[in-house]
Image 1: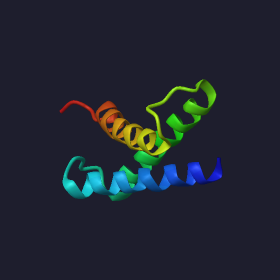
Image 2: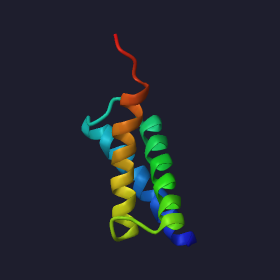
Image 3: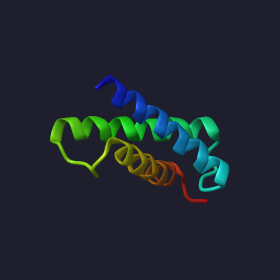
Length: 80
């Protein structure tokens, strides 16, 4: 369990960094990494409790990180 959660955090951090570096988001490096790690943690614990996922833990971390990056900034961004 511990290596899986550490791998999830590392993969989510890498996804956050790459998404900011590539221009997919404009949140800032730290904010994108925090959003990705939060989404990955949430999906990791949902997978533990309810038992559904996308297969491997790495794929779950990638998909949940990208999903969090899409949902969170658009949800909190106001209309101008």
